[in-house]
Image (cartoon, rainbow, N blue to C red; front, side, top):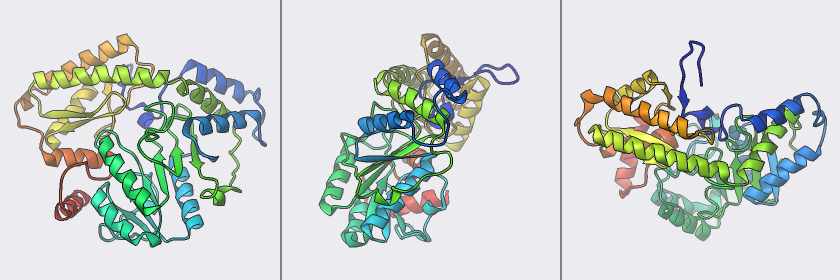
Length: 384
């Protein structure tokens, strides 16, 4: 990307991971341009294009029904409220970030319900097991998956707990859905009753979807709104979904990202810098040992024209060709050179790892700990 001052940047933010195919993807742009001229119909009612988008979503993510929304945040809220209304129980057990919405505001005390009846278990499965003992009051569990700080073993245990309790599961795959492959990233890990996807649907255009059980989502049946049939958004979604259904963009992202991550780890290690890299090429995150190192890392990256999502997950797009990758690797080596004053400053500790995980997932990284340690970590990170 080139900014107004003429500086060239390499983008690892990609609209918070929404842009999977690359900015200004020609196929998407052409489809949107046609829709903007009215070639695909007007936004006044149902259309074959809407049927195509809905069919593609059901084919990729599964479920009996699907509803469309404009943002992931609104889609998650709709899914949770629908399931709670259907089940008729007051509490929702939650783990992860679900968008800027008062519904997810912190409770007065950890592991207690907030004003909307949401109890955050912060990805701690012992806490979840305790909360599920009162399963008659639990309408659903909603999890926003993370694959940088949680292993498949975590999901296996979560799946067993939910199956034993027979509580509906909503997976909030707004961020990760369709980016790891042509479907839900947890399809082989969790038996979700309801799913939500957004960022991988339309390459940055405002589209989100809720799908799953017809019974659980029945309260959404009559929901519609003015822009529901907007042809430009549907055109972007149709083209993007057709591409992600092949799995090719995701493979390019993973392979290119893996090569960058491998180079970054080697460069950091070679310069003896106290920075780890969590995750893989699909999504990765820098884990600096201290706040000072973190501040210096992102300052150096900006000076070298590497646009990172500060403190959060980094995401390449399928537009990263060999030349861009090579350029990014060279720039990152220079970033490490700029960080020479921090060489040998000490290892990355548990505090840094917990803080990095909290920054990206609003919860606790997977690690051995007892109930007292869990509460101490939560209280410490909430106060940070």
